[in-house]
Structures are given as C-alpha cells and as structure tokens.
Amino acid sequence: MKIEPFGDQAVRVIFGDQIAPEIQLKINQFTLLFDREPFSGFIEYVPAYTNVVFYYNPIIVIESGRKDISAQRQVIDYLTNVSKRMDDCADNEEKRRVVHIPVCYGQDFGPDLEEVAAIHHFSTNEVIERHSAPKYLVYMLGFAPGFPFLGGLPEALATPRRATPRLKIAAGSVGIAGKQTGAYPLDSPGGWQIIGRTPVPLFTPKADPPTLLSAGDLVKFDPISVQEYMRIKEGHQWH
Image (cartoon, rainbow, N blue to C red; front, top):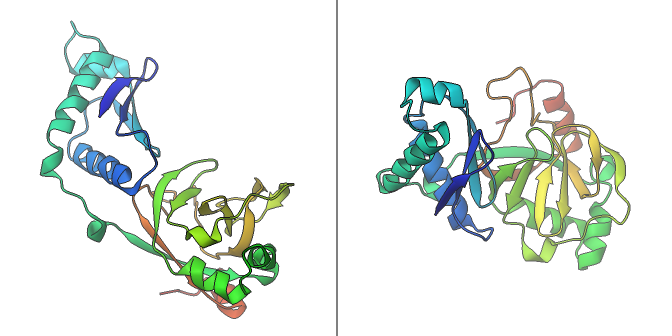
C-alpha cells in the first residue's frame, strides 16, 4: 500500500497495480473502516480500479487539527492509521450487497446482440445465458454519473468495441466492450456493443444516494421479457 499527495486538496491510497477482485476487496475494506470515523474536513472519496482518492478541505483540516502541521500531512497520517487497523474490518464477498438488475435482451433494446452472437459463434440465447449467469463486481463508477465498470465477464463473451461509436445510446442500455460489461445511466454517445436494456434507473439526481450502484457491489443481470420491461417502466414493482 502506498499513500501519496494527489494535488493540494486530495490524497491517494494505492493498493496495487493490477485490476483484480482482491485489490477491490482491499479498497472496500479500507473505505468501510474509514466510514466509521471520517476526519474533520473530509469531503468525499472516489474509488477506482487500484486506488481510492480522498478529497478534503485544507482549511477545516487545519482549524480542527494541528496548526503547525500541513493539512496534507495530517490527512496522510490519518489514512496511515486507518491502514494499520484494516484487520479490524474484515470484508468478504458474502458481505457484499447483491443488486439484481432486470434486462430485456435483444430486439430494439439490444441492437448488437445478434452481431455479438455471430462473432463468437453462439446463438443469441447462449449469449444471454452466459451474460446473465455471473455476479459481476462493480470496480468503480465513471465516464458518466452512475456508470458501473463491471468485472467478471465470461472470457467467451469478450468483444471489441464498435468500429464506429453511436451518437446516442439510450439510458439503461447494457453493453460489452473488450473484457468488460456495463450499463449506461444516461442517454449518451458510446461505442460499446449493446445487447440489452434495463428499465431500472441507474442514476437519479434527487435520490440519496443518486446512484443505484456503488464500488464493491455485486450485480446480477436477470433476463426479462418486453412485457415485463414495460410493466417495470410504468412503475410496477420488480422483485
């Protein structure tokens, strides 16, 4: 583990140099422990694949702490002490939140499903079965508010991005790009191979929290019919 300055109002904690579930597990463990007692002046933290960045207000840190030590030094020392207590906050997959997300695959909702199937010499049903089988790990949110970068895509479904990105992909669209899968929270441009769509909002600005998913969650995609999609979209309860 390495703790280092990240500008003049942030500190980065690095847990490794490879994208791996065990690294994300350490990040989740660290943030869970930190959440028990954040320091004065803390603003937010942003988890990524191999690190987490802690943002702070240096004025509040100094006013509430020591005047003879820089805010940056105080934050680094605080996070160093958190790291020494990591064994007190064991985290494992069984404790992770599992979020079930309904997905209507193919047809107008998944315009690239047939192409993905053809690339891998699968039927469309095989693609759906393989894609909906795993529990995917949310490594981080990024690109757009609430967009989850998910690990755990079966190797057999790894598919290159589209040669020409679309100017607009509908909110809720579920896609594949390389060895990753994810879901678009907003209408936006994108080059992922779109195989389905969820009627469940991934980003609701006025909600608390505004994002459906968080780093460390597990995601299970559940296939649904067009009729079920429309019912959920109209406000009917799902699960």
